[in-house]
Image (tube, rainbow, N blue to C red; front, side, top):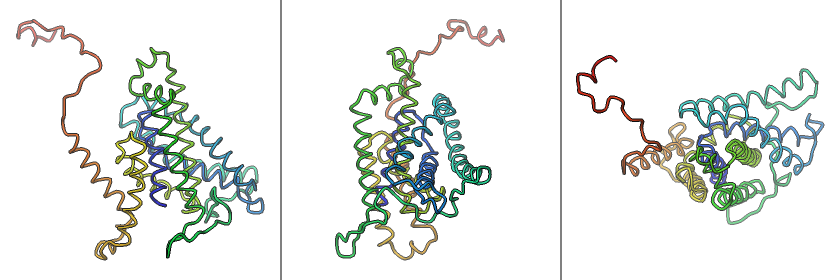
Length: 327
């Protein structure tokens, strides 16, 4: 189950990186905002919610709110960050990581104080509903092994998301044009590709995937923005395993990460498990190992090649004493 969660979140990270060149640290914040909006729509009227059915709430939150949020973020900041230095890209998305959850909670507080809507706040959320039946269904697969409808929904969502993204990026004209707009924006513009439109579409798709992951994992974990951020950070390992470009490898890496984490929790020596925070640190230890391995694997196979030839040196051919003159 945890492996499927990592696969869903890592697939969204790879989609963002492949289509915009930005490593989106705010992916977890988008997931939390969408799940929080879904909770507001689905909660009964007696608890302050809108009382909408699960299907309607899912369509409005994942199919409308999430892509609209991605479009707004693209128009406000992310489109400009695509042409900024690497440090600015990281700082910009980290700023969104901090701002989006606070903005969502602030909007609910203002709706209650100013409009007197009585919406449920984050402190009133314990086990929010998911996309599965409510109450959840449980099946006994093997002796001592049980599955519920929420876990099945997470795994099914991970498989569908990975397959859809792989087909989109590798076997559609939209995926080809989007990747071209990231790799060679000048040439893509000369070929008549609307780079800004492709940026908006990619961020809308990425936000939709983040929202889907947020709604799927909401009933398994508490609806707390810190939990979402921690899960996204842990899913970095699966994204690095797939080299930030291969969706099938990312999906497999997410599943392997979940299996490894469960094996460590169940069979690791007590000397290690007694260390405070060791179990939750397993994905980050694996991430460190992958980064070291990838760095050593790449090495320096060849020198870098500039896309454009450097300008000619105006001092070429002059004697040494004239080169050193201030003029």
